[in-house]
Figure 1 (cartoon, rainbow, N blue to C red):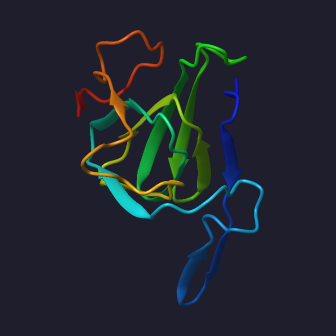
Figure 2: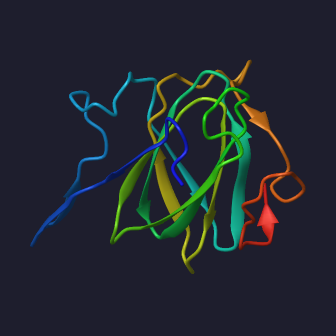
Amino acid sequence: MMIDGVVVKDLIVRRDYRGRLMEILRCDEEIFSRFGQVYMTTAKPGIVKGWHYHKKQTDNFALVKGKGRVGLYDNRQKSPTKRAFMEILLSEKKPKLIRIPPRIYHGFECLGKEEAIFINIPDKPYKIDSPDEIRIHPFNNDIPLKWKSKKGG
């Protein structure tokens, strides 16, 4: 089931003898809202990063190296998909961009034997003094999606 407001876009990888090129997010696409910053985050094998949500920020996640799983849970009070959850498997071979709207719990885990590398393009810059982030424990919570990995943070 899709969660209201979540968008998943297949990404196209162009390859030639020099390597590859993959456009992740363009300002002339419907999925784009605005630019805040670009950052890289990783998860080591067997590690979960989650759960959290943002009150105002929209994330745009793409895995660029390794294998991973993104989990999403809709806990918004007035959402038509309240209590729905999604899992999206990601790999370099089938890349996707995932737009995660505010107030959707999300997290990710590395499923491979090498570190999973994600690029995030949120629509707001991170404020270290007042982060727009609400965290809950990765395992002890009411979210029906359970991680395969055993260690979290």
